[in-house]
Image (cartoon, rainbow, N blue to C red; front, side):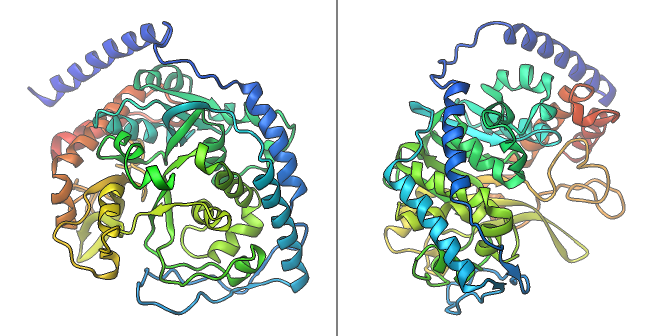
Length: 468
């Protein structure tokens, strides 16, 4: 079949699919209704916002002397992170008092979260140019056979995409939730919420008891349902994954939270694109992490990262769990960068994270590959996080990048390291680009973030036909 004929078949199929989806979307969903109401979320937010504001760090924020170096995690490192922030003793004491008030309150009488007991689901944040990326990731997830419902949180109605939210996502057992509808229960509170803070709010306001949070550009390679019913989730209730880097937490943070400084080689920093958490067991951890994020940009983000790579929400999850002495498990297997080489230079575009069940099986037996312990079989790849850059169909082929060489020719984006590609199979990249093509052709002319852009479908189709 010629490429022109194939393109015609694709457009015809998409037309049939679109019509079917419109019909489907106007019939009642078979999904079990949630017992959570917007009014209930509003009650929680009113109480929680009041608590967060009344426990504000009422002092000058820390001043940066310099940014911490982003150094790869070294299990043999015993040097504590330097303090690169300036705060007066009085300001440290003021933050300590405010933090103590908040912790005491959530220990004794935490604001009640609204969620449906005994439910599991996926949660993400997206909007604008991230929605097409999310569609690709969700379609990749559905290839695993997972049927978990997803709630996609948008900041406000300006980010709402009618076609994606009312047609495409419902067909994938997902729905859009507009955060501003909840935050407006306290007029003006939404204006204080910034980019990295959406993640914790999405977790808090999701209707599920047990959740897997996924960044819009991340997807699992196996159905995640098994993780909820296995160790380490059963005993820990919170699972995170590592980043590349060693800790750069300021010693001032530990003074503020009245906690002993841990050894610098206990674990890597956190890459928070994937988080499993139970609200039933870790309500207080989520509330404290939300507090750190609410006061994050000026106070807690600098304290937890000191300007190192990825400063934002990433360190708040485990910091909160440790302060509250609640259990958690951070996967020990180091993440791997996935990409290709050009002119003898490796170009990473994607991160690979590993199976928490298999990693736990090893560490429980005293095998820590991150520390050099030998083992016959490493954990299998479990997550793909295609984050640098985002594989947005409207931009990924616009010029030099993962799929375009310096001379303008097409190339496969995932070529190295070979042992990682062998672990998940060479067919994965082909599947990924099949979903990029589907999304390009389904959303072109329909999603607001691509307004004025033409030829997205045909360009991706040309790439896929040439490379695969």
